[in-house]
Length: 142
Image (cartoon, rainbow, N blue to C red; front, side, top):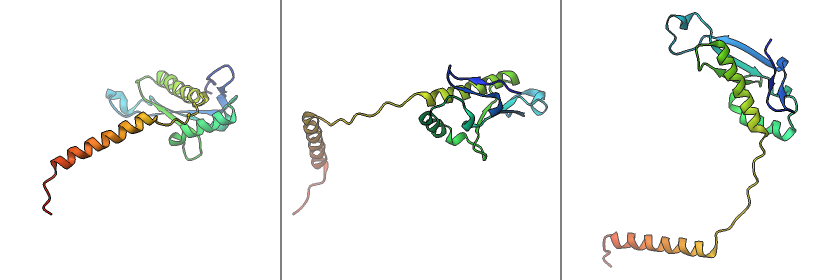
């Protein structure tokens, strides 16, 4: 049974919400590549994450939307090393990082307007550019 993942003092993923599976990794590995299952597939039931506020849960669902499996669980894989235990640590760190990112509230955007000077400068630049293009054009015969 896997251990729980502690993200912060208030937020954690219980061990019962985590499923770990070892599968064969792709890539280099010598003779062991076809024998040893070192790649880790870690699945987390997002609804069972403890201590997550509703708005943070919504942000987590948005952040994890491309990593969800058919059952709606978060799927994180790791095959960084040829060691199963280190890959498990890496996958757990990825889950904790994703949940931690969901805890951060995005800053609200303040509406701003370009200054009158900025608008004037923009229009003048457009006029200069248009004049250059006019100068390059072939002369018209009226």
